[in-house]
Amino acid sequence: MPRYNQTAAFLSSTPGGFPMDLPASITDSSKMVKSSEIVGGCQCGAVRYRAASLGRSSVCHCRMCQRAFGSFFASLVVVEGLVWMNGQPRYFASSNLSKRGFCGNCGTPLSLENFDDGLVEIATGSLDDPEIAPPTLQINHRYACSFSDGIGDLPEPDDKTVAGNDAWNAKVISHQKP
Image: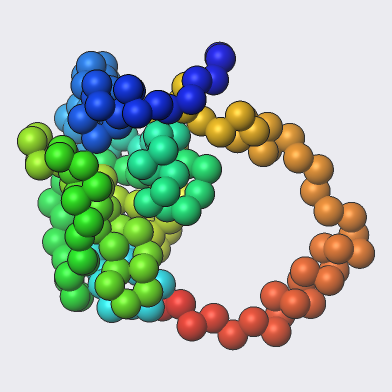
């Protein structure tokens, strides 16, 4: 698939930088998966949430998501029944259509919430168990960084480097909260 630069013209023609003609299968939350333990939160533990069910899980390659997550893409999963159990996120209205929730203490990206349709997505990496929401779709793929499709093909480090990383990781005392 060819890559295109996300231009100011694109951003002005689609408010918020998101295409407005997404297929129903992308936004449909009727295929929700229910789980008894859908919980997550930020790194420092100041903000915690619970959700009743999960829907479509995706990665978005738009420039807004890249910036919001400080990454090549954002992993998001549609949720229903979201309850902020501990603390409240701070919000940044990243467009006229949506706001992004994050922890005001540690900066962890937490949510993408639409003003117009009430759709709420949680940052998959903020789930206590992100394995429950494997991505099933790429959104705005034509705006992906040119190298993102090849990341899985990058070589893994040699045994000496792995051993060095393991030794370094063994010394780490994480201040992140579950």
